[in-house]
Length: 192
Image 1 (cartoon, rainbow, N blue to C red):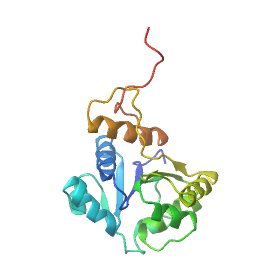
Image 2: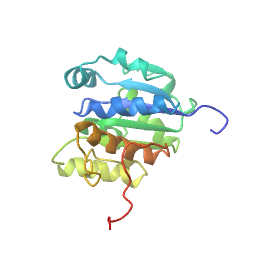
Image 3: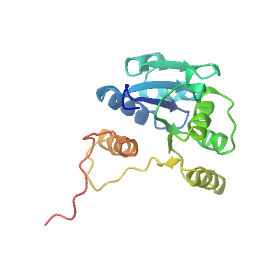
């Protein structure tokens, strides 16, 4: 993938935490990485409620916005080359569907393709508490190499705002994809 622009598929589901997706898309744009975006119907409602935006407004950060019902879209095929997919935030419905191999919309189909092609899949579940079913589904995915990053920000960098909390989570996602960033101060050991 060195000889062409980096591409990442981004899925946004109806879990709370759409601000994570918005910040991640901004980082991709700032670093010149091409974002191919798919937003579920539930995510449209959550984006409106939490961020006061509609999916079309995300086009300012994404190369392409796909319709979640368009199973014939480019990202539904393994022949469409991209390096990774991030589902941020990720609902337990999506975790369960992907863990079960259910590709009933473009987002879950793209995740299924990402797995079958051996590409990096990062899922950022946003739920609490986790039920045994949630934990079993996430464990099943983790065992096949899916990276599970629950939206649980750290506090060692002394966050002063909600944006600071969002940045540490998005930074952790970027770390999984080898995207350089300065979203949070890295731990360098105890201060003297």
